[in-house]
Image (cartoon, rainbow, N blue to C red; front, side, top):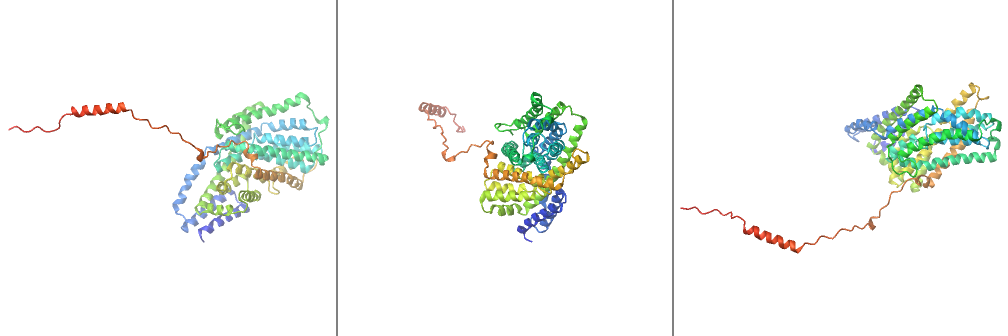
Length: 504
């Protein structure tokens, strides 16, 4: 076998082990090492090439940027368990309740706010479904709409800063986390508007699908209702602005006063304060949050190590050149490349988690995108929008699995009268996946949705640069005359070096 044919073979092996369902981290490392030993036996690169692996592992574990992941995960886990979702959903549900689709609006808005605080899809979907699904069913909401809006609103957290996906994207693409966060604000707000627009249209076309909440069911009115809403929103907004603003992740703030790791640590302190305000801070809550954080962080590190082993061998057999040659030759230039990549990522998300896609596939695509002149912040946010669908794909979407489990629990506890069919959950997700794909198309063809909040670097035209150098100083004639006189005097009084004659 020739070396140029081995890179496609490695890529095919990668897809195969993923489809079979082996743990990704160990599959990547095993495939990479086996391919590396085969390449050494064929003489494609020396055995000393693999001796760089320990240095690569040390580089992963000493990466300061990736240290932000456990901090933001810990912050989200604390807020997830402190009762913030319950308070927000209750107050927002009563605020929007009288309107057609009011409970849907409240789920979408709370999903956006919680996404900017917690950053975890599983906890967000579970918390909102436990609270809102029985209420929506009780007041006659369409089953498919109810399950779809809960799953889709939970996945918004993948796009809303401070998303863990955006941190990984920034690390893999070599871009600022603050710029990545700024770029994500436009698409995330646009997605909320698309979801709300669909709910509004459904309220006009099929009002029986999204009825308003009866007046007698609303226990809070007037100032007491607004006070409860503000009590949940204002502390959360302060935490968001403190964490994201300190690292330059908000539109209009171009200077970062803290690194992502420092901002994440500050967010943990803020999360503890919020938990204490809700009277939920306890040793048990902190321990549960730490357990979840350790599990997620360990998973990320193992996947990253396996991906680094595979990518190192893949580059050693000129795999990067094979990917570049294959993708840069696509018709349509940048647009053709973006469409092909997003179709590939969409189908890959049926089987892979977003961390796996970011660590395995992104290092192959980033250099090609950069060579084609594509802004890497825009490219990263675009892929992040696309990877949201990995949680919504029937039949493998994790958000749908979470809903399936919650629906069974609610039925067993008697909080809903009839079981929810899996077909309703899967069919209910389809309109929301379509809306997410519409957002992908908007970001591709209107890149300003990402770049409008990112400060543009000043472009310098070297042909118009003019350098004014000061003229050389003219010599002073009087100074030259003085120097000449000084030299004459020195010559006059210079002692003689001739030896005297010997006397007889």
